[in-house]
Image (cartoon, rainbow, N blue to C red):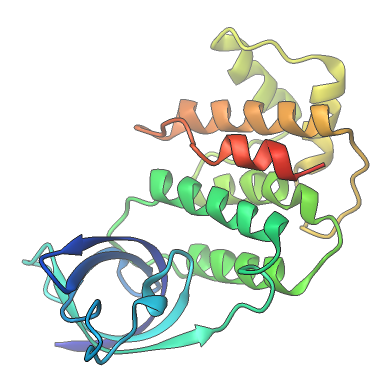
Length: 227
């Protein structure tokens, strides 16, 4: 049976000579896996650019709950990025966010509020310049509420970190307090070292709550490009 849904590409792997198997977070069905034949050939109907990580898509898909891999009937780009693909800071943040999603999106069911948050976040990253160096921090603190472990306050985060032998000083605690409940554009004047430390603390917080949340390879890139 065919269904219309929006989707966000998470990852793909090559399959046989010209095909791919792609993981997409869909608005209607959560995480789903699709096989796309011929996409890596010159004669393919759909181009490989449509399946790059974080691409926002409009889809018509086959959905059979008995199958682990389904097929895509129709596909088009929902929103073409203008700056994320060419701005080094934004592209580095995009790579980071993609790794976070790949480590944390697991449900095979509809979650429209979460999908809307992710779509709105990616559009915001593409369309705005203010406070972009802190975008990933605001993303992490807001995203965890949709995953079910949003903190009540900064003490909630600090106590959980300390239970896992992770120390938090007063400056770091104050920053966590400033982040909670703020939107992406909120002004935040912090040093590069404190930004990195806050990021490390938030990722430990994710590891506490998300089973299998591993180390992120994009961390080293993010630390280099964000001042």
